[in-house]
Length: 428
Image (cartoon, rainbow, N blue to C red; front, side, top):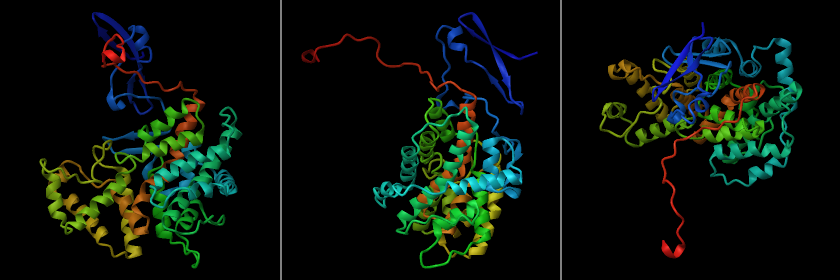
């Protein structure tokens, strides 16, 4: 027997079905509410209690610290799969077999060239431009070089569009960083794997042979996997709602990049490093700042600890902490900022105040540490987030279009002036 929710308004009762997900999540289906009640809607600022869709891509349980992509535990994927395998899984629903993965990899490499005219667009930005603004613009500019919209009813057309953006996006991201660092643009090397090639495009020098570092590239691979999708967050919801108007894939992704740019979303790992810089400038006393964080009257906020969704622990942080220790150990970086970060980490893991409140270092804390150790400028941190989130955005856009979901159109409760008679300008 299906479950029913009953709503009573002014003595009138209305029944709405309750939808149950495969992990026993419950949601009241209120799509008929406005019609049945002649205009009543729900108000939910920030949509914290509103499900905008049904999705088969990512399962997240913040209370239990669970994150799964298509049913696979994030711990298993980070340990056993490559980023390209995870991208295929998220987008197409299953892990690829050997021949599927080989074809996927080869098809991406075949599309990895970027039109030379894109350089002119990149040249138009000053070096001081924020990389996220540049990346959003370059992604949007891809539309000009690929003007035909994707035929979502054609598997081949959909596949080709997906391969094209997965191929070109790392090039655009690497070019964005190299312009900022006054380095010549690098086109990569098709003999390398997806993540290793990304690293080469970012860091190769014209007067040196590129030397791959397995520990660094493995950590980068894990970071991208951990960021690949995270259910209906701000940027993912943006991609879906923009795509619901039948905007193309590249346009929808550009909108997602802009949403990710915000400091409350993708900018969190950048905020961690800015906080560490501020602590360093004030003498580097971690105990002082842990005390400030515990003082409710103090405006200081400890960035990179706790999570809005994960109420127990962030499962991604446990994985990437190990990678952070390995990278720092291998690179042997001597950096007072990283020393402060490690000091804060130890204080938080041992301090009863933080332990009782489960305010553990999250994925943004450790990703910021790794990116700094790799030599990635702090302004590029959110770009790295976008590189990881790309397959999740694609998967969500594809799912929304294949399910032919209606255009997003939230309602509102009007709180402005009631009718007013127009006054001539001489009477105002």
